[in-house]
Length: 255
Image (cartoon, rainbow, N blue to C red; front, side, top):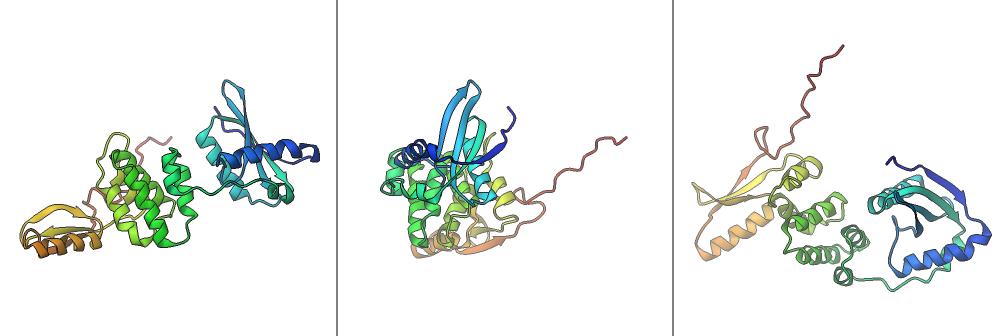
């Protein structure tokens, strides 16, 4: 199915009641596309029609973001942007904001959890929310690593917990559908160094991708008097399987 075009129009005054009901329904159920309320209707076996309600003057980038979210969650066959007066949005009854804990309890989908994390301004509160989400996915290693990667890719992870998030992704088990190390090295932090604990001669355990975590483990080993005694940096190189490699050159014959 080809991607539907985005059509834009202004709301008519006689649509006020219908649009306000749709926006209130979205608000009550915490539904939105890129923070815009909408209405949708199944119109055929191929998918649904979506009307997105935006204030006059909304940027094209914001609309495109909503369009991508809509197509990511529904089979959209028609997409219309309806520009509404600012007063209409002020009439919507806003629900009580949900906490991350409440959203996890209600089984909210990952994209909405990440969006809620992005709204948290305080770095420590945001780090605590990320830890809570990752803890909730503890029994599903691949899903947990995917959530960690998505939060990093969307730039919502504060520096305080980036090392923890990075390790979850990079140390996750690869499969036919998921390779966290390759994705991270390709899109988040190309050519990362690794940090190996040693006892002076032999490596101990798997390498870390966070120096601070390696230092924490080393301190614990030093305190107990067993295990590692030093940290050795393993810089990325062209032979590193996690390092970026260029796209292969095409050998297709040219006529």
